[in-house]
Image 1 (cartoon, rainbow, N blue to C red):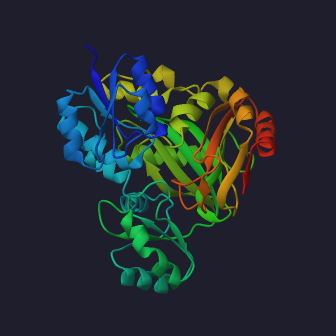
Image 2: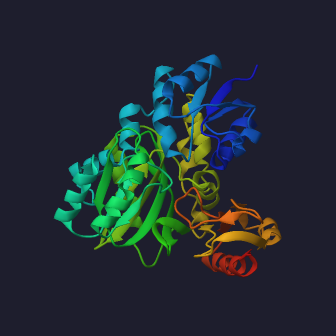
Length: 403
């Protein structure tokens, strides 16, 4: 009889994890709040449940005598996985560590205490408190939920009216405490860093330079992954991130962090104890590092030791590059009349994944957060030159027309 493993949630980002578990022979049950999630198709069974309801998830895990409860590429699942695993006596990062890696106020306080560069920050429980903070600071700020995800409820604050317009929405996405964070705006280039902590060592899997949507400076539009960057010190970035993870005391886990570079320093924006979303850990990291981090996550979650020999960045991979690009329709809104270029995306060997969240006939609204971007493609290439060629071809061949 096959052993059961619980995976949450059931979005498309969990499909590679479900597939890996299935290849190992496990029976996979996916939990999610919504019907018709993409990962259901790959699982043996699914159950409709609020993944924030720890007690309910625990009941289901006990019902199936689950070997493990795990998740990847999802911030909001981290506390539930930690709590349920702890209750069941399974390997877990624990609730204290889950809070440090999901609660943005905890991250800020830890970074400040341990002398890591971090923006000035304020926790605000009311609109009046937030307005007072902004009046006293009186510079551009960022307002965000305490523990949200997918850039939901994140807004640039340029005046008091911005706080009045968006405070309630930011507050709505805070889960653990009903408050928001107001932070100093760091004006600099943004980067992401993915890695894995095992035993007493930390291994970097990927580093990417980001670009954002022109109409939303807080939402990623393009990430370019490569081992080195002539314009920025990636060795310093890797060291900064590694030092933070080691100082945090995280015993094991995949991590995904975001930094901004300013005045010779990398400022921590946020860090999660999970692989990067949008298939970073599921597709990109293995393709550009040669390291199967999700396989290590599975090993650890079922009580096996990961082989450290499998975690060394392969030298012949250091010239590899990748792109995660979200299609940008600019200010266009309305009904889609035609999407062209799909066959090109299907048939190009360098393109590892693509997806359109909209179809012909659907109505597109202005991009607001990670939940309503038009779609994406991922390409992994042997050189930067090849990657740039792919970008040009996609820009030329993939076209979205509106009525």
